[in-house]
Every structure is written in C-alpha cells, then in structure tokens.
Length: 442
Ligand SMILES: C[S@@+](CC[C@H](N)C(=O)[O-])C[C@H]1O[C@@H](n2cnc3c(N)ncnc32)[C@H](O)[C@@H]1O
Image 1: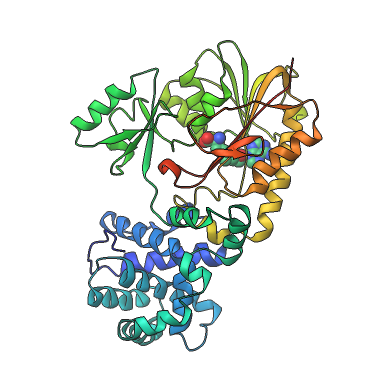
Image 2: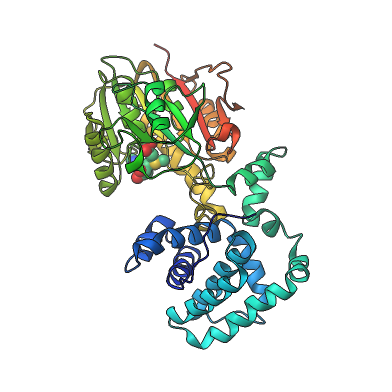
C-alpha cells in the first residue's frame, strides 16, 4: 500500500521516528507522550514526516518487528534497541510509502548516526539492501504468522476471534487503516448544513451520518485551526461513535447530570451543546486532565462544575443529591480506537482486559448508588472486547435486580450485545464503541 510520505533527504525525522517507536514499544509510553518528546529540537518541516513515519511504523509494528528479526542474525543488545526500531522505520518506508528505495536507505543509514550509533551504519545499510534483494523470499518465511498477516499481537487476535468469530478480520483490517476525521457541529452556534457550506467554501467537503445529527466526516483531514469557526467554538473534533452518547443519555432542562469520567471533555461539551439548561458536574480522577475539560468549555462558551475525584469513592466529592442522568464513559482498553492510537495494541497486555473490566465493575457499582429513581445511567467504552462491554453490562444487571436495560430498539447503528449495542471498528467509518443504557425504575 502506498502512503503519502514525500521523498526527503531528512535523516533527523527518521531518527526521531525510531526514538518514538522505541519509546512506545520498549518503554511502554504512549504515542502522544513519545511524540511530545520526539518533536523537541526538530524543525517544523520535519515534524510531519516524523509523525507519519512513527504512526505508520507503529501501525505495522507487529509485522515489521518479525521482518527485522529475519534480517538480524542475532538480536541487538537491549541498549541498542533503537537501531532495531530504526530498521522497522526503514522497512515501513520501503514497503508502504512512495519514498524511492535509494533515498529511504540513504536517509535511514544516516539516521543511525544521528542516534549516536554510527557503529551500526554498515549493518543498517546491509540489512536494508538485503531486504531490497530478497524481500519476497524473506517475507515468505513468516507470511503465515498471524501477527504478520494482521499486524496485531497474537493474543489480541485470539481474543477478538473468540469474541467476534465472524467479524474479527474486518475489525482488524479497519484498525490498521488511518481513521477519518469527524467533527461535531455546535448546534448552539450554527447548523450542520450551514457549517458544511462554510467548509465547502474553504475548499473542504464532508459527509453526514444519520444516527449522529451533528456529525460530519471530512473527506480529508485538516488542522483544527483551518476548521471554520473552531476557535469560536462552532465545531469540535470528535468521532461520530462518541457523539451518540449525548442522544442516548437524553438529558433534559433542569436535570442533575454527572459526567463521571469526563476528561478531556469531549462528551461534556456535547451534553451542554445539546441542552445548556442541565446542571452538569464533570468529574475526573486526573487533575492534569481536568485542565483539558476547562479549556474545551471555555472555547465552547459553556459551563459545568469541574471536579477532581475518584468516581469509586463518592464520599469524597458527592453532595448527597441523586443524579437524574449519569454518563460513565469508562476507562477501557481502547481496543475500538486503535486506528487513531496505534500504540494501544503494543501497550496493552492480555491481563489488562480483565484488569480494566474489574475497574469498570467497581465504577458501575459505586455510580449506580448515585442514580435517582427513574434516572438513567449510560455505560460507554471505546472497546470491542466483550468482557468490557456486553458481558460487563449483563453481569451488572444480573447482580442488580432493581436495574433495567433501556431498550434502544433498532437505532440504525451497531448490533445487540448483552443489554446494549456494539459498534465494531470501521462500521459506518466510525470508531469501535459500546453503549448500554441502564435505568432504575421510579
Ligand atoms: C475514556 S476517558 C473519558 C473520555 C471523555 N468522556 C470524553 O468524551 O472526552 C476515561 C477517563 O476516565 C478517567 N478515570 C479513570 N478512572 C477514574 C475514576 N476512578 N474516577 C474518575 N475518573 C476516572 C480517566 O482519567 C479518563 O480521563
């Protein structure tokens, strides 16, 4: 597959991409964190290429990693692992970009010097040239390995296949694509059609999706500063699957609403755009991430009570008055948003699925006690693993006989999964998401 990386003599962005990949794959840091470190000292013109190489290499890493192993007679010492990952960046360029082979090899060899490992320049050069000569035979040696075919860790593929025997391959294929850019038009400021006209006048185009009335999918991604009216709060960047939450919660004027895991505030803003007359508390355990909620609310010109606190321990922050609506957008594996965050598939470990499920169980149990009779609790994750979704919500209902699932009918998205509905990654071009709507009868 050919991607739009331009030929460049730049060894710096290649070295930076290798550092970023190693920071994620070996030190367990997120791609966002690693990118923040990687851009330091890099010229503006090199940043785009660095990001493209880092994203692309991480997206294909489980496959590239096996290919690099084929090229190295024996593994490199752990202290030189960045060289292994630079080779992965090199193979990514040779396999998936339009960079001419000679330019990719020369710049990657130069990059190893920038990594302070000039002693490996000959090795990197020999490996990449061997790949160009023998790639078909080399690829054939590992072509059947699941992680090579699907560019996901093997445990992940096994878990997905167990959960979705008919759909796991399409989920994985969608997760390996670059995600489209979705925006949410602020209905307090404009209409979707009026905003679309301005986008078209600015040279863009976009399509809508009926289940999410404020959502538009841009034909080509653009920087937020180029989105008409972004600074004035007329539009926000948010996947259409995430935009279903506000409609499902159905908060009306005067209701007390708790957004229990709110940062960075994407759904908080949408809830208020839909109904500014709610009394909204936006809670998050991470004080650092609360700043993002505040920034978003200021840009949108909206207000909420923003609180730091652990949703599992309401005694520390709750005023004792029940909520009419609770949104639990739970911490999860993020297995539905891998196409946006390719680092996720490298960072997660098999045991994380159950650890997340246990955290979600505790959050559900403690927040349920805060719900008013007749109220509604919307449970959401951006995961496609059943343990976090249908199985989680079904187990909750089994343990809470007083709870009922709200029948979502046939809303034109997703499929039934336990008491809620599951969107699988790539369906309707949206992220993988799960929603279950629970109520405590009055
Ligand atoms: C999926 S994100 C929420 C995304 C957000 N709702 C949005 O739409 O922008 C999950 C959030 O839960 C927070 N979180 C994790 N454990 C928590 C807890 N015990 N109490 C409150 N917040 C928690 C995390 O800090 C993270 O910001």
